Amino acid sequence: TAAPGARAAAPPRWFKTGQEIVRADRAFDKGRMLEGVRIYRRDSASLLTQRIVARTAVIGPGGWVLTGVEAVTIRPDGSLRSSSPRLAWPTPLTPAEVVAIFQPTLQMSALDAFRGLHGGPATVGADVLRTRLFRLFAEPLMPLVMLLLAAPIVLVHARAAPRLGPVLYGIGGGLTYLVADGLLTASGQTGELPAVVAAWTAPVVFAMAALTVLLYAES
Image (cartoon, rainbow, N blue to C red):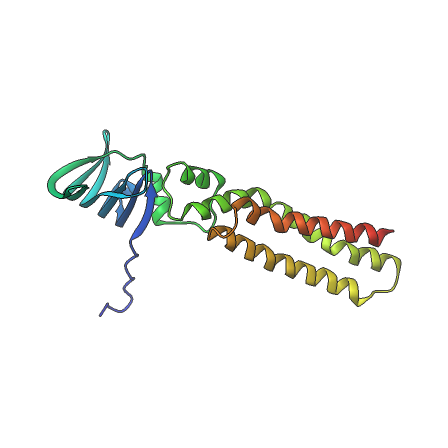
């Protein structure tokens, strides 16, 4: 059993870079060294062509170098096993990206999503990246939608005695929007809906509906 107060070891990280799926147990030296590395190389049809297991991966002036390498190359006529003390690893992975993988943030920038879709390191699938990229541009509409949903309350209170209906409309509309937006986003991330539809449907539909109600409330 672990000693009292001991911190549990961080789980290994899986990520994609180019056509390779990579697993690394730990990262050291500000992302310049990986330990317990497994690399799964694929062809253009996403079929596995090689598995590489390495003790460490270290970046230097000439790029990444694997040490303690055991490789299995898959061929039409069978598999070929080989080993090597050192092997160059041609990958665009940078130390800063390694740090981001092992210390992920809750928010993903548009640049990170774009790079993940175009061969950069990514810890999530393409559907998640596409949905996140479109949502980054659709999310600024959320305050506008909430404002439009709440506007009838202000109009009614300014013209007559307070009524419960507009209040329930504003609260119910806001909650319905959040639920619908969440369901659509989840559908985009799982590939059930195209990312652009998942990201933009709720903001656009609810903004148009709320604007229509507001125009009728003013008339």
